[in-house]
Image (cartoon, rainbow, N blue to C red; front, side):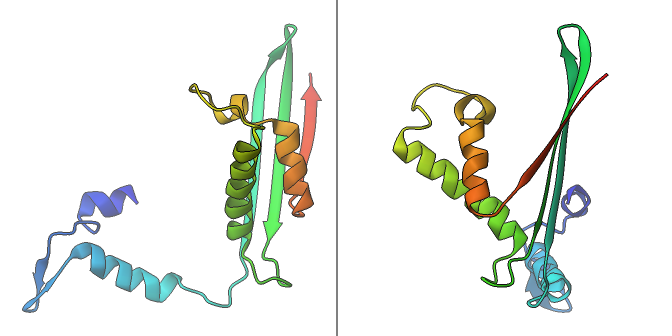
Length: 134
């Protein structure tokens, strides 16, 4: 997307195209929408997080993996499931007090990880965890 921005495809200022005033951004959206919209597509979200470091002076690696597929029964995309459920869980945790208000903290500091992962599992989103020590 940086290339699109640098080339001006995201500009809102209209330019002349054969006598018509068209914003590059509107044109870009119209062209991409024709080619990227796939109403019957079934998406996939694949995620791997690898954390490497030392613990007690010894190297250790922690790896989490997530593979989420389109939910055919409910017709919910994998992207909707992974982003929407995640936001909903966080909102529910905030409203219940599981995430304490106030202060500036990173998500890993503020959100109780085990509870969050358990809530994902209730929605049939499974994280695989692997630990490797050298």
